[in-house]
Length: 155
Image (tube, rainbow, N blue to C red; front, side, top):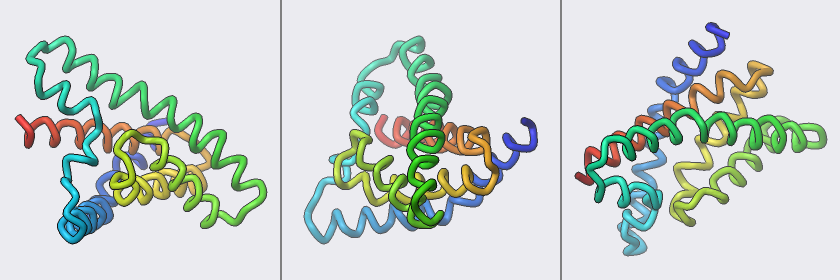
């Protein structure tokens, strides 16, 4: 378990160039098509910015960094990816599960750009490690750091 958790941490750090590139692409497309970048903000962020209750903020971080990654990884990589992989090549199953992962998130169509590559990386971890733990750790770090940055920048 410790090795899988370390793999999750290393994978998160390794995917920063991909995260930055996808966010830059999102910003460019928002500029070109005159879309507000805030339209891709998760609905919980404005709520958290408006509150000063430390309990609400702490519970939201726990939900985003622990509960959501565990449940989403069980569903998207444990069930969906496993099902897709049974009939598709690994790259195609990764891409399709990553796209579906992005599609069901509440950030709207603009969220497809950064969330699809994240979903693909998480599926790659599932394929590579034959375990969900590394993808759970990576997913938790993505959510925690993203929420922290969003709150820091919007406050």
